[in-house]
Length: 245
Image (cartoon, rainbow, N blue to C red; front, side, top):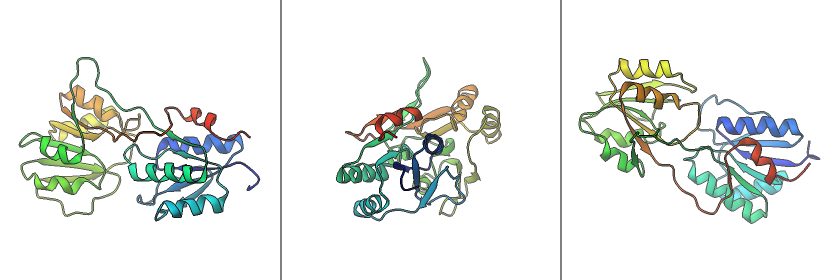
């Protein structure tokens, strides 16, 4: 196994799992690093490492100890810290680095979304007394508790670490979702606003079409911009930046 070209994938997404399967099939030795924040995650092909590195130095030590020859970052578009960390570690180790960055969602022609810079802006931007479906992950949910005028339906893969306010409901949900189920959810809870992070991808895009069909207003948190890193949009495009077999 160690005689093969060894690649580290920064994982946690469907794209990361597809990339791992492809690289193993092509003959690479692959280890995927998962943050370990999700219980019972879908596991990729190849080796898996759980937990953070503690620091860039910790990641560098792992890379050197494991004989890693390139880093393919396929983490979530909002996982800014691990992207910055892995990019810097690759530079320190003089290794190829490529970011697999799925395309962000865009409004359809004639459609208007309210684009928001970050979560803090989103907390203030939601209309008074809105009935909102929050699909922003569990970490940022507590920030919306200050808006006691909102009726909130929060959805994430795992429950948030907070006591839900009286006007909140929480449901666990793991993508993909269908348009029909998303419409039923929004209609059943009389949702009039959808707030999402612009993570892109097909697995959770059904909520956008459901919102369109029901006339639900869409509020979208723009993904952070990280300058200076090499990005590709498709899984197979990663290959051109990896050491040849």
